[in-house]
Image (cartoon, rainbow, N blue to C red; front, side, top):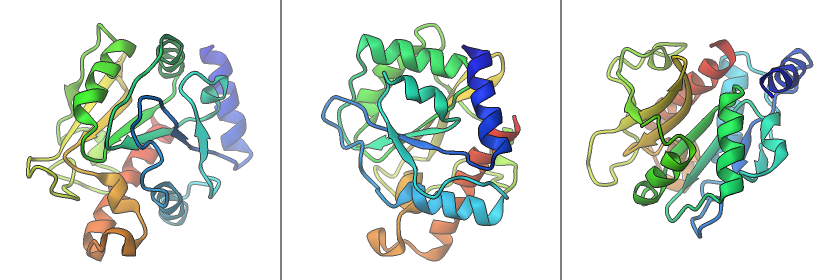
Amino acid sequence: MKKIFFFILLISISSYSQEIALLKYSGGGDWYANPTSLPNLIKFCNANINTKIKSKPRTVEPSSPDLLSYPFVHMTGHGNVVFSDADVVNLRNYLLAGGFLHIDDNYGMDQYIRKEITKIFPNNGLVEIPSTSVIFQKPFLFPNGLPKIHEHDGKRPQAFGIFIDTKLVLLYTYECDLGDGWEDPEVNNDPIEVREKALKMGANIINYIFTN
């Protein structure tokens, strides 16, 4: 499976047709939140870090075989998340084969998503990613780690990860709300400097996927 995934990824990169996807999960949470965030992130990355990602992200379900077609899958929402047994197996295989899942708590997801992550990797707990990690170093420097985009409960922003053989395969961003920062300016009325921080951090995530 790993060879198949990387073969698909190699074809995608060489033909300048990378695609990324949004995860459509079950449980009642609004997986479709922030509809302009991924298109804006794609536009920013293509303009600033030399990616060639198709402008319209795909939508993929956790149990779909199509999951293996995407080097980066984004997940967001405010509410409940439930992964079926088939979802868990497919997500685990995807991540072990070299895929990358970014889960961005849009406020209210935390109490649900942590137990679902445990289903995927029961023996690999989430660990906090330090500010010295390469994901905060390039191409844009974040010396203090994950930036704060929206207040939520006023807690410090935290980035948690699951690592397989030292490689980050699952990133969970909490008390940050990068996706809101990627949205069109009029959606949340964030100052331009806040939106730029969010987009630059998003670009660091995309860069990590294609260079590590």
